[in-house]
Image (tube, rainbow, N blue to C red; front, side):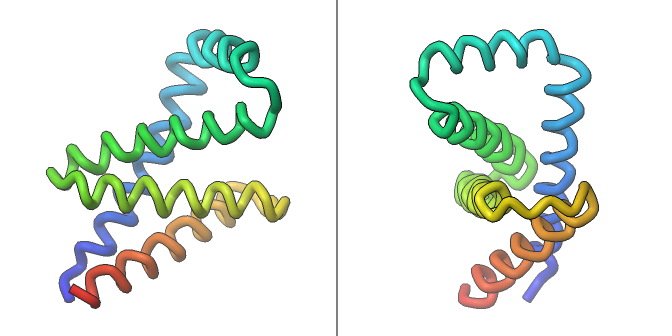
Amino acid sequence: MELIWFYIALFLAISDEIHTKILWNVFFDFYILLAGILKETFSSNIQLWLVHECLEALFHFVILSVVFLSLEIGFLAATIHLVVDLYHQLSGVDHGWLYHRALHFTVESLFFIMIFSAA
């Protein structure tokens, strides 16, 4: 098995950091306006949170699809990242940035190891 699983998990981590830096540092005002529009559109905070996570997954889908020139890898990467984010938020466990990054990298690596070992 090649190391493609490692590169996907690595670029997904980089994509997540880019997403955070871009939205909180560069487009902060736009992000706040978008959050206000979405808050008015949806009736509950849970719906708002799910839309936020899905938009983040869409960001990762675009980035990973372009980097690896594969819609399948982009879709799978965005989906597993979304699942880990949803689990992490629903579990209520927050041990900081390093724990969050390690959780993502471990689960996403194992997921892609399983995908590529079956191929």
